[in-house]
Image (cartoon, rainbow, N blue to C red):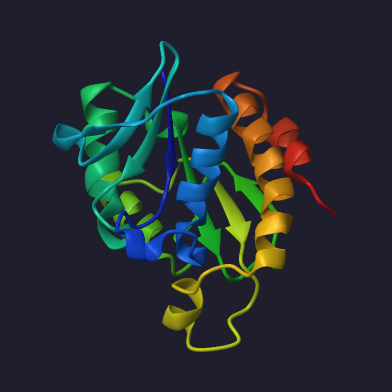
Length: 183
């Protein structure tokens, strides 16, 4: 069983903001495949469950994402190596995608929470670049995307959708990275 988690904040105020790019990516994947999320209070999030994988949008707010991830992974007995976290990264240029099997939180509070809850950094993550903040970091990540940026994100999500499929199909790290490459 695989768990694919898009990070974001559930409040309507945060829709289409940079910090919610994880939600946007997983919503794109669900839409492409005609999957419908349902709220599961016991998991503190919206899920879609298939025979081979679960999609999760935690409703704990970004800084407590680990609470929801650990509830789902514990209940379904999913190992950290089978959990893919999709998040924003303002240290990457806008629209760049980076896939890694493990790593640090890199200052991302959602990843810090997950690392703390799972007691490991050994889980795959797919980070989507926001570009460098031109204003205060908090204001930057909570700002909405411009119309031009949204158009670019459609191409980004086409690649992340393929990367999610590859992850579910147990493709190698190199194969997944090649799909996401936009160099």
